[in-house]
Amino acid sequence: MGNDFKSRDKFTTIIDAALKVFGEKGYYNATISEIARAAGVSEATIYEYFGSKEDLLFAIPGEITRQAVDFLEGMAPFIRGAANKIRAIVYGYYRLYKENPYYSSLVLLNLKHNRKFMDAEGYQAVKKAAAILLEAIKEGMESGEFRKDIDPYLVRSILLGTIEHIFFRWHLKERREELPDFVDPLMEILTRGIGKPPEPRTYQINISIPSEGASGTPPAG
Image (cartoon, rainbow, N blue to C red; front, side, top):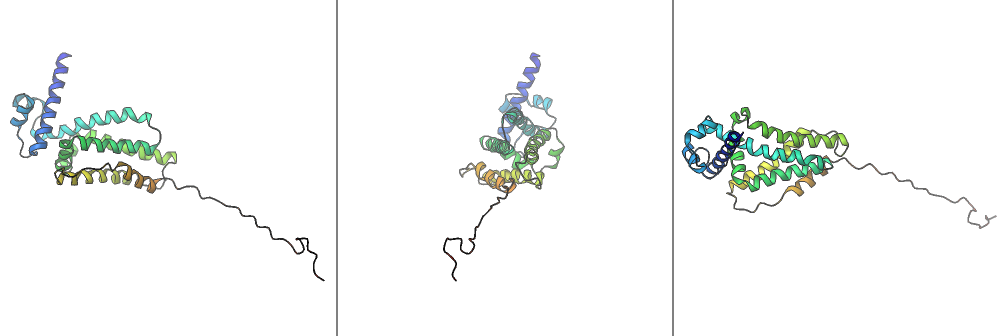
């Protein structure tokens, strides 16, 4: 078991080093020798864990996203309401991308456009995170918190697309601009659009028209 722990520690060390080197130099300009130096291991050791530089690239989002998924799954049972769950998930993406700029840069600028990544094992963790978001949307539809006529896949695409677009521009501008917390404004717009409309109110107005002579004044004549 001790060897398993050592192997796991070395795996994590290589992942962390690769993330830093890829983030600073870009995937195509980075070399395995640079990653090996940053990790304090030999190039041969890296190839023992990963068959190629591309395999190492594909492993990074799987490892980091898996940690985020574990956190979300542990937290979800304690959150009441679908909108609150979605807010927590969106904030999780926001925090992950902002506090790990090397990671978000790698995912948005290198991996999102790589078709081979979708066949990699690391992509399964990314899919699982997106599935948790989809489940929260469907939960709101079933509970009546959201409208039942919405397309949950479209709602998920709106959320993820907004997050990715904001961070994509942030990276293109080399993170020079302050990144505001957009979670609350995004959730307000979303819940207004997909939230169950309020029940129509009915009003009853009683109008009493007095008959002739009802006022106590005797009729003329």
